[in-house]
Length: 100
Image (cartoon, rainbow, N blue to C red; front, side, top):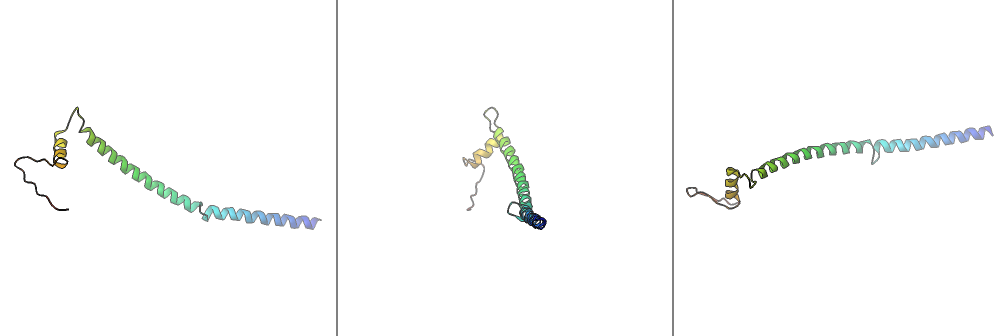
């Protein structure tokens, strides 16, 4: 009876070790393990950098829009828009078009 209990204890201990090893392997090398966590942190850093760049672009565009408000139109901005979108120029200017 005592031998049977010892054998049972050894089998349960080995089973627990195998199960613990299985979970430890998956925690380290599995598809959602520490390597995956490092990849996610790298992607997160890239996204934060992209967000900072997009914030800079947004601020630049907001500043440009502020120059075109009806209350106060910046003369330089008005001239730039007239030249690019309406293709207007002054009388003494020569416009040379280049093929793209």
